Image (cartoon, rainbow over all chains, first blue to last red):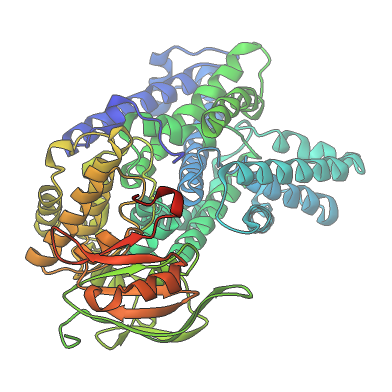
Length: 341
Length: 269
């Protein structure tokens, strides 16, 4: 089965103590990424100044850069990274497919197309208004990719990944077509569409709070069923898992999480694909540990990619969506080779 | 015989995929407390029947009941506490250990807020012990031999702790030694752990040896059922499998043993 990649650690039964240690290391890694995200950028700020800016009443330009720009950017990175990581893990569990993620299944592209269309047709300008369209687009794309991949029988992993890629390409082409017909839409959507954590205020998180929390709860509710589902549909049914219902609930969780992420930052690839693989390698494939692990692993990867984008072309910066697209392509190629072997 | 608990009754059962009817209007009772073997030629619907009994396929018409309780009116979880099924050639997720696999058998017994109980641990230990996989518990399932792997899967079904156990061709792709190991284990579970067993088998001699009750399927319907000694006659085997044969007494057990007639070229001079 195309699930975890066994390392000697991944197959040993996990004791609670060991799991706690792994989580502690993950949280420490996240803390490092948060510190880097607050300190690094066009104007590097010493960590002492970061601390002073956060907890003191420093009003220097450095301090304003930290509290006014980098703090919201970091918080949004944590929230969106967690949502994408969790969505990716549920995608892979529900489809039993290591290549699945909101990006490779076309869910992000569906959300993006719906938002761009709404900008074009309805003249939306405030990102707070994007959410309903992102949700609708993601949901339609999710249903479409299952219908495409379903065909005759069981979900073939490669067929599903291909269907998702085809769907994502079609939706992206469609998005380009919409953008090219209107310069105004292009201007408004360009920075959102590339996927970026920059220039997004914390107030953007308020409208997505409900779908994010609902999606997270739903994901945790289906976690034990995803473990049984990893044995195959028949064996899972025989264990009393309502297979169809589990897939639908998991799919709803993915749509809620991915659409919320896309509404805030635009589509960001790679995190949803990579975070579950990274976390599985250190904590195993039990979804009751994997899902919370992705709430840490997703933000770690997203913040690291964002900091990298800030450092590569200083004083200019590369949007995190471009960085992750570059990193995601080779990863997808490696995973695809493993899956088809 | 039919009054023992955990009898499965199918009434007027019709199962098919699309326009293709596989099991047609079948009425059958599998006795509780016994080992039933379902045999028949390829594509006679024996696996489909087993999957229909376990509710893995929805029938077009008819009912399946365990001791009179319609399985289609039970929740998935409630059914999974009464009936376990080992699918044909199940595939374990890569890297999963034997113990982690067997623990999944406790799924239907777990609740959201009290995930793992002492009863769960005890059931897993018993399942590992009975199948002789305790020493393998930390090994990844994909590193095991075919026979060990099949024992690990049976351990999962045992951890599920259901009075009824359905096995779909549990001996396929195993060598003779491992086939006998698996069948002896099944027989022991029936005798000492009070499990009602229904299994699909290919080998008529093994079916006759290990089963109390035999169902011979042909074209989606039972051609005969009953005690192996009554059912397995040379006429029936020739009729169902198209193989002229003699039926002799198994020198070890006295159960019927099917010996196909040799062509003239191979016959003893």
